[in-house]
Length: 195
Length: 391
Image 1 (spheres, one colour):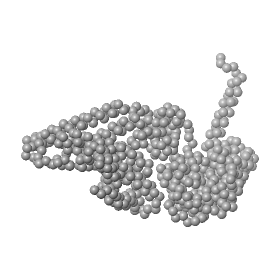
Image 2 (image 1 turned 120 degrees about the horizontal axis):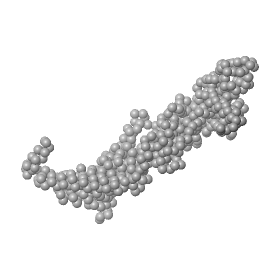
Image 3 (image 1 turned 120 degrees about the vertical axis):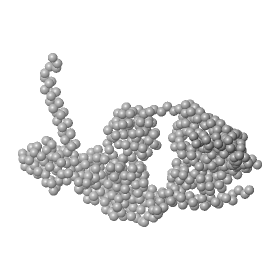
């Protein structure tokens, strides 16, 4: 069933194969913006929307142009180009159409351009040969998974700020340990879907 | 050159080169390299041109006209994003100050005066003189002076400690000393003192007010920098209770009210508070306060001395609160340097400005000269009044 497959992909991308905790991608942004809940939420929203659109755009270019022309080896360069062009134009358009949204989320847009998850999603879509809806669903799932990871991490780190952490572990080290523990917990999702 | 040769060589040898495509698309035994390169070049050129044109179009179509002054204002702001101006960030303030004529140019507290002046020049607004302010910690009950009701072992943050029945200090008004203000300060101006009371560094403090907002006990206040005598206690408890809880709290005895020559000390709810509009920073109350709750932020007060301008009117001997001034009528008076506390009352009362050296001397001198100038002007006006105006 079509819908079942889409939902499966969504769950698989967000929980079972969570990009941060299972595939260990996008760690720079993950540690960079998870200090405060406010920035984490802003980043999550921006990230998820860019992910969905870039997955759709990349799918169109890949299946409609690159596969027929037999030049799929160019996909890394092309996907980077697509994401960068989309993010840049989104940045320009958002500035005009909704300045308030731009000031809230515009900062994160520039960070996203060269993010590894954003590149990984079209590459996996291409590699797995997903169709259009599946690609979007996978993109959405990955975005939601990243958002979940960021929000969990931000809420823990806000509490960690107040905790009496031993001096050598303060700051990033304790954040890495926390991320490791959450990642361990996420292995619990691995039996969620049986194929 | 080498690149071109390589391409030519590749093209010549292309039928013999084998290449896989990979990436999930079925791999092929061999590909026609000329065709692939041709398509790749066309495709790359095409898609780049498409993106380029698209972005150029977007940039043209969705161009936002920004006032160049916003960028200029943004350049001179302090970029601390402290929120002292009341806007969420520096950019928002820059836009508001350029667009709205009612927004004053001096709201950037960390930038202090130079920023205010620069913004005033850019926006063409009048800059109002702002009195420099500073964060003052209105509690002195450190761990050696104030008692604690119980041992608090929770999260080391005042906002968390206050949830445990109002904090562990016996005095419910006192500073808890877990350093929430230290963390809140964006300028690193607050350090925790040895006794568990935060110390504000006057050279770094910009009076942005983040610490005052963060303090759950409202111990920190933003007050004028020049007013350096303050009752550093917030306790509204009855005197006996305050005394039991803290060695250095205000017990509401009213001594400062009696002793203040300017009636600046006011008593309310068992707590003395100095009215900063009236206070002349003489420091008399600091001496008389029985619990040392009033603090003088001036480390060493310069003492008064009499110059030869003295006409021997004995005014200073009458006004001196510590009887340091003495001397006979018509003779030059002397001030006992041992007794003088540098309050400056005699400086302000002397009719001929003969007493120098106190902290208020420059201020008094300015007022004196202004008065003299006004008198001369009045005199000149009176003398010309009798004569006909014009010829």
